[in-house]
Image (tube, rainbow, N blue to C red):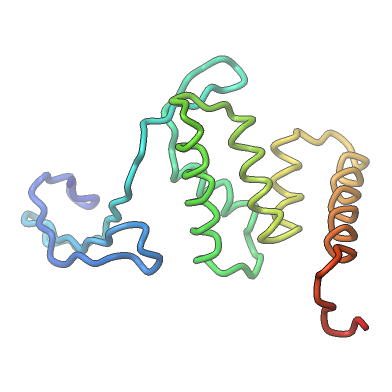
Length: 167
């Protein structure tokens, strides 16, 4: 593993343990040349995914890029980082289990929007505004209307226990 500080390839693993959610291995490393310490994470990858962009270009799937776009949507929102990590892991697992080596940006966007809808409504609308390329205010109204319909359907679902304040 290359040192992020000096670029040396001579690094040693000092400690390994499972991550909190047991989906990766956390490794503490130290560089033999500069003494720099850093952490890496090792995850299972079922298949190499390629993303087909709208322009027709193909690029390797980048989980970190997905995580960054979700983080932008969730900026200044009070959402537990472990829930975010689980949501992103779920999206990646769904993409890998599609059985295809190539996925479209549309498939990724739909899965991310489904995940964000369960995490935070504001983040969902933020992501949707970029993903769907909103041009005017009524685009926001449409998405907010979709959220309202879904919330009413969930609230009125048979067998659902009443929440606090309902009778």
